[in-house]
Amino acid sequence: MLLTVRDLRVKYGNVEALHGVNLSVKEGEIVAILGANGAGKSTTLLAVSGIVRSAGGAIEFGGKLLHKLKAHEIVREGVIQVPEGRRIFNTLTVEENLALGSFVRNDAARVAKTREWIYELFPILKERSDQLGGTLSGGEQQMLAIARGLMAEPKILLLDEPSLGLAPLLVKAIFRTLEQINRAGVTIVLVEQNARAALKLAHRGYILEVGNIVLEDSAPALLANPEVRKAYLGG
Amino acid sequence: MEEFFQQLTNGLAVGSIYALIALGYTMVYGVLKLINFAHGDLFTIGAYLGMTLLASFALHETIGPFLGLIVLALMVMGLVAILGAIVERTAYRPLRESPRLSAVVSALGASIFLQNAVMLIYGARFQVYPEDLIPETSIDLFGLYIPVVRILVLFVSLALMAALFIFIQKTRIGTAIRAAAIDQDAARLMGIDVNRVILLVFLIGPALGGAAGLLVGLQYGQINFTMGWTYGMKAFTAAILGGIGNIPGAMLGGLILGVIEALGSAYISIAWKDAIAFFVLILILIVRPTGLLGERVADKI
Image 1 (cartoon, each protein chain N blue to C red):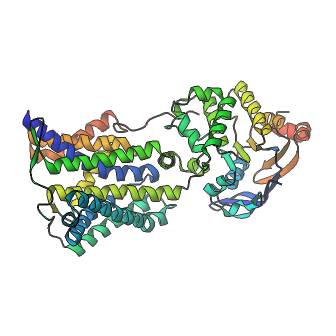
Image 2 (image 1 turned 120 degrees about the vertical axis):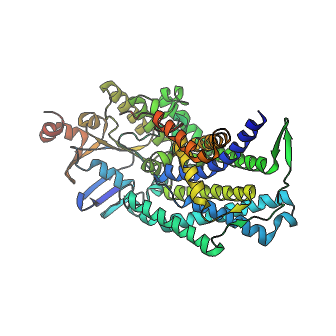
Image 3 (image 1 turned 120 degrees about the horizontal axis):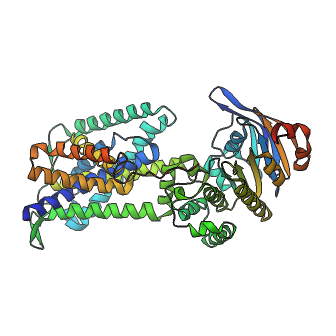
């Protein structure tokens, strides 16, 4: 296993948001985490990235205990998050945003290669490289957020709602790119409300309900599961 | 016309000092959204340390006035920077997760503590810098006689500001500081150690403030333990004028404020100097509430 989350608990003040979440991700996989609003999907990712502290349990990645590390140290392990709402740096240029993505890397030659690859994946970003991040359209901002994540040369990419607020065609384009990224060897964990799109892309999925994992299965099985269809796929 | 240019250069010199101090306010505000009320007092300490170091080492006599002043400035900046980092560690970091108001009160406490410490160590009277440090002559610039010290103040401040600007805009660490000012959690997700960014900001800001204190001592020769209050107030105004959190804004705001003050006191009335400065601030804030260079790029959903 590349990433193992065991009995993860997270508290916001006195309220427990995660009551012992277990999940695991193999190298090369795309794993979807599905669930309603407030089920704890984002909290799970934020805990893996060390942005929220865990109140119990363990997060293990490639032999390292992530829950003992600080957020910026976790990035150095190759665990990269593309956060919900994109969180790009609005008043910095596209180029500067990308440069920040590679903040932890020192190998200039390889960084340049990554940048070339990113501009192949998202040609529009090359055209916009001198523009301020905040002047991009919503779809372009999402592309920038993913591209910025890739600049860190992730071993695992955690994406929180990449389809949020995007037109269906754009969602398709973004998900196709995620497939390409995965084929290039990046393991992906995908948190999504758009369950259908996520399960079509993913190999496996977890269903999260009010802070607990209630179901785990392969993506095709989840797509066929009547309960999942009823609750998350609109019948 | 001669009078106008004299006032203009004088205003620029004073304004560049405001700008140096304003940078400390604006950088800390940018990253922590906190007004470091102790900053004015760090400026005061810069002025006093400059005096003490001048008196105890007399570097200008041993290694020459030019090199002596450079070494002196570096020593003052380094010491005030360390003090700034200590203030951050003791007064602000323990309250990082507390409500904003607690940090504000702590900042005021740190300010009072430092101000009183200076008073207890050096006394409440005005202190004077050694004389004949800088020749009291004027230099002929295109028919305009400008005192050497004014040129020195302008040159040193502008050089420091240019260095800071290049550092912030062009270097990797500078970009990290800007990123942390925009969104701390997003910066963490880039692998930036935000605590170190904050520490760095509390080294750079006070270093510049300390240099400003030294320049005031050199220019006016007289210093007092309350000088941080008046200069701090003006510099804070300059930071807001330029757009708080915005680094070029603080530089521009300082220079504009200095010039307005100088011209206002020359052509309207010196008694109204401060009133004019604040009047202009109010006017600008009515027209541009974010300050001259305040950022207003809309968030897109």
